[in-house]
Image (cartoon, rainbow, N blue to C red; front, side, top):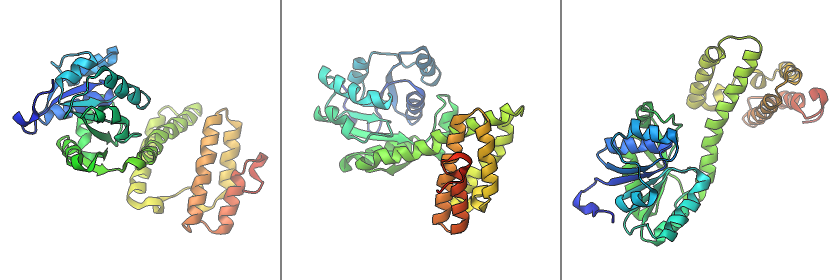
Length: 304
């Protein structure tokens, strides 16, 4: 059974289900805040290695044993696995009344923890809005990050306190807004990686020896400017209304064997042109010319 937390005010026995990049790092952060990590479930060799590096001395246990020992259960499994895991453990009867059950999925709020809540557990959704390497350097990034948290109002302060203890800033996200919240983060983070990889591949195909060194200063400056100045920082041929340059880009991409990059470029250029039009960065005539250059017809000469 979980120990009575009132005997150790503020200090909890933490069990981690899933020693992936997120689970191991957050477990280490909670340990640094004074909580005791009582067990970790780690199946793969990579997970076991992360647990050994970030959580030395913590025993690797079966999931039911972790839940039996823990006052706070941290579920850091993939999104699609979370509902089945929670329901399966409820069928085993292992959830305990008063136990904190925390998941780190961006997609879900606390409704997915309903089977645990029905057994008397306290559901919390705590999602770190950052990307993880699974190494100790992630701990140094936590103080600069925010966590999207969702919880019943009566226990929301618990979720907030846990995030603050890990050095980050909590931001409340309503249950019904979790999917849109997560889409915003995935669009900013995951697609940035794709764009960087596609651009680096084009440069490598041209014979550039160090694409990362060429793209790094440009992308870092663009990101910093975008975060500080919004779309006022927008530069480039679309923002200038240089339809001829956009047509040249399109022709070059069509001649190069990289269809995914071509489609990404055209899609992002269209989105950029439409937003620039809405905000008055482009005149209607400039916007029409840019959209015509990007239209889905040979040569880009058809109507937008």
